[in-house]
Length: 442
Image (cartoon, rainbow, N blue to C red; front, side):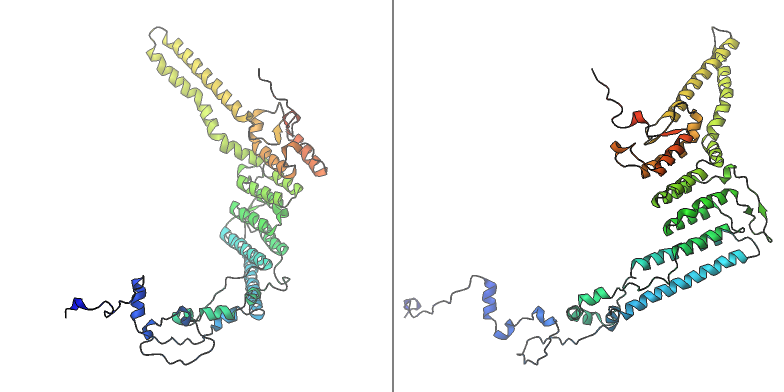
């Protein structure tokens, strides 16, 4: 009988195939090969059992409960955190004792010490002040977690450690110091710096003065800054390395005794931050209003232009003499005179217009302006003073422009009188908003 003659019923019926070939392959494999290693097996089980595995199944990795003692100790609330704060306070006291010893060495030294020694003391006081502020604010040191185990064990025990450690204990690990009375007070640090600069053998240089102002701003004790300004201009200057110390008397009105502009601005910023109007006026009086400051501005701002103006007639005469050589229709001598007068007139007129434009522009004025009739040279020399008073008025007055002119109080009236005595005017009425009617355009 031919194979084709077999009945359809006697033929083996084909097994229905699944839609996915991958599912078909998996279903044909033995049962023990379909056992997969689940991700949950990597986690340390709470109840350990011994299960008999079929041949060929991967055995679960035994994970031992590895306790990270270092991490637990650092996260313990109470004793360990308090000990960490106490260590910081002890270290701060030790550093303060070293700074005090260095101050005593500068004062007791038989010779005049260099500027670097004073700057080192001020830098030490500044770092102490910053650390004391951080301790009072409760800022903790960065946590150092040392897990002394292998990387595989750390990974396997990570889930268990996260379950064991409670969030409340982590929060309690940072404990603020219970008492800050042992920390050096800002007044004490400020007094140390002030006594150091007042000592006769300490020279107050611009760098020393800048470090002192920065320290007083950090300590919020700017009341002693005007006194340091006075000492900067009037204190006898010790000769470096002289033993016994020798001193020279400076001239307070000399240009080199002027307070630098950036230091005066920093001191004024400290006074504004402290909301102390008398302090701000003292800073302006001892810096911008000092004769030494104006002399320094004349030398630095008007020195080069003054030399150029003095040499201008000679340069114009030489130019006119050269031009007279090329005159064909006029006497060379007369041509030289005409050329000299013409060029001089042009330079004089344009220079005068430029100086007037430089000294009378007021686009940058906010509340304090010059009175009418004030000499132009006085305006130019006193511009820094006017800008400082303008800044003070803006800090103490109303911020809204439509409320300007309504300020009251003894401090504000004192500021207004001070401004008038310096040849200026505070809140000129015709320049206030709403006082000047808009111009009609036809």
